[in-house]
Image (cartoon, rainbow, N blue to C red; front, side, top):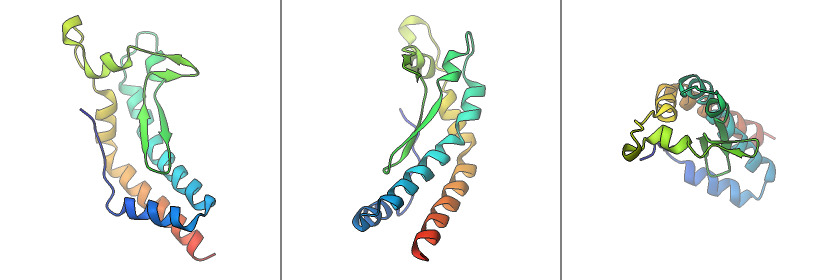
Length: 130
């Protein structure tokens, strides 16, 4: 089970950027992914179950040229192995799912779609006009 967002034309955009061999464009795309994923972090942290607060603190964006994800469970080298069972549940242990990452991503879908569109438009405008 996962929550994914597909961007129409994204594969072609990545290929075009790769074909230009322009590292600045690739960095810009990666940064756009990271900024977009960062929009999901605050609501995910707010919705994460809090006993000590370390699970909420471990929610962070991660990106590459291919896309972005919001991860929970590893922060500053300290892995929170319980992040998966808390998010997805573990029926055998009586742990009910608390899909805080999926809920945050769903709630922010319009904001990150708009922001990603703005960032990609700015990236293309700045690099095509130069």
